[in-house]
Image 1: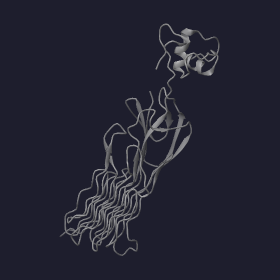
Image 2: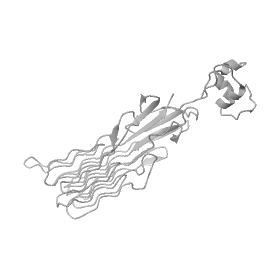
Image 3: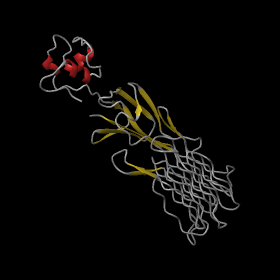
Image 4: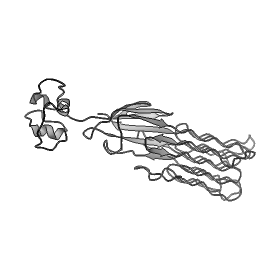
Length: 337
């Protein structure tokens, strides 16, 4: 809101300053001087014409881009988000966020796909309806991806779990690793897929339970072992559960939003390793390709999840390793004008 550019009353000033009409005004008060833009000396009513009390969030940290009236801070590694002006309700006083954790590593030896890192987001919210901020520094943690399981000789039953990503009070949990050599998938932000051989379930997603305004859960379960004896389950994603099919379980697709001003998918689950089928492509949102047996070329390992997508690593083919999970990302958006 802005005061009139023509005739102006003291109540117009009160309303602009969010003070009840009829309240006596002290023309020397700091809010009045701030609105007038006159730090010292006498203030005339004309100094208060056409003025706005709107203040906007201002901050530093990460890679800063602009989309319309919004600034976007993207963190691809751990750093600090420093708010230099907390704004007010007349302008903006909160931020939107997307906190994407690191993806889980794929299982080895016809292993399950790694689960995507958990994803929590408030986008889109009004300028005053997101996460309130203060003029202070907020440490940002961007989680790394879990390690891919090296194969059947390894003593670990799953690929490595991804690491958490954190902004303020929001923590997204790393994705669960895919199962190796007949083992279940591990739980996590999204669950890892189960490996081939005996029936095993996929790992549970949304573990521990988390939700945010735009994301009712941070992730979904991994797929169970498929019906064929040589197929595992795909990793769960930020959008849907992984599957177990006779052709090797596909991981879930990632969740797409436009917090940066462009539509981008993040949090895709990794595909399971193959026993007798060609290598499967990766999934939207950075989910890694599952390994394939070759025939006649050498069998292939699972491929890594996409960097800064939180995608799960692909499961490895027979006797081959799973791919590493993709690293996470933290994005913060606010109205600046």
